[in-house]
Image (cartoon, rainbow, N blue to C red; front, side, top):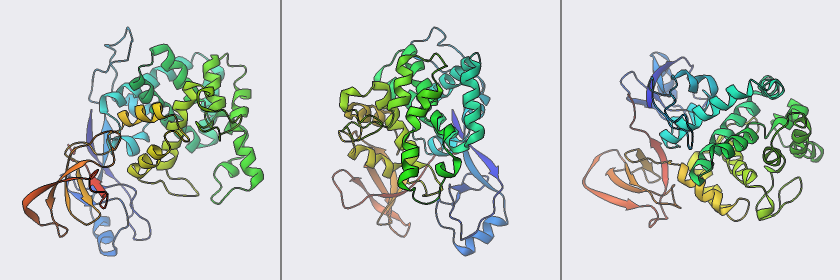
Length: 364
């Protein structure tokens, strides 16, 4: 598994913030995600630029948990065929452990292949993809995240299949909701919001002929229930919520937070993670949040970070449950000059400072 540079064609303008980092052909960072200065836009438009993309190495071996086919091999095109868009969010930022992510991709790919034998389910997924591209992509991401969380918990292969199938179909009820409501760029009216809130019930109704496992149907119905009893459609409380639904709820909200939507831009993953941590025991099961944090590596060792005061250095390590506040070796001052005496900053013990930007060292 590796990150590689691939050429991209795009028009840089100061009016449109960059949605990713851009590099030259040698891997030197030209532009960080964010606003584009006027002078830099013209320079970038005059040369070839590259972005980071995820690839599985050819014939890379990955292992499915509790699977008799643990030596199963797949080619690099699996990731590109199943969920190429996930590269931009989860892989370029190395958000998920690479082996766990590779296993998730191949597990999901195998499940989708199996679903081709069930024409009704396959047709529903294809209809969702054609109806609303975001909802389809979001469903794939939620399925992948749900797999990683459940793998950390120790789910068997059969339980993983039922869970991931529920995650794939968790928003299938949105096929009956007008796209104009799903992608409305401003706030929904009360009536429109009630329509959106009906999608779990609509999803179970649409799935009634699929002969789905009862646990999978529970996942579809309950993924908007909340640990504190304030969710919908049945206001279930704590252990009344199916374990699959508790996992999908975390995956669903996290992916929604970091993804651009018509009514708001996505937020940085580390901000989203902090929000999820604060909701442990409130909106989300503490056990599921703990497992989720074990799948996330938002600041991997050796990633270059810049603090809010302009100083920069490399991440040494972090400790749960504080993945957004690692230990950093400060190497450069706020002007980018190397420090004569490097120093160590533990952001858990230094709450006045925080990481502003991060760059990754794995450019091949």
